[in-house]
Image 1 (cartoon, rainbow, N blue to C red):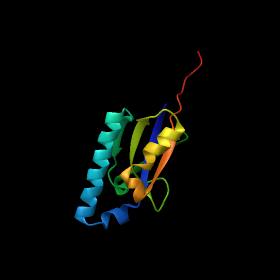
Image 2: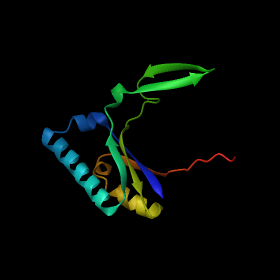
Image 3: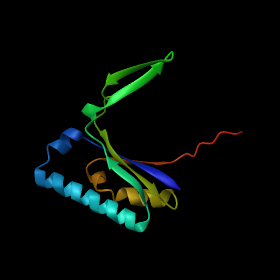
Image 4: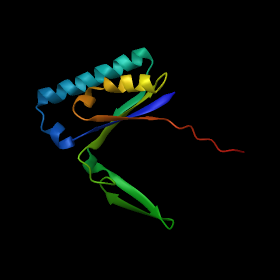
Length: 119
């Protein structure tokens, strides 16, 4: 079963870290991606550019509007995601607990819902 691990953190706090601390966190994250790849858990993982570059699109009455920034103000921002293959929820939670950014932020784990249309 596939699970999406949404990695959240405080961008301002991360930006305040020293270059050495930031580099170590990136290195640890890339190393863990390698561990997940070797174990067969990793489907794909990506970091996201800072939230200040985000745009939000809404469609109302068939008309699209775009605004700068995220949908809601929060203390933590979505920093990236890791899509994993896991045996079950417990396996997914075990994998998520070892994501290096979980030590400075949080990781939301959600099962992927397969959509199908009855024909």
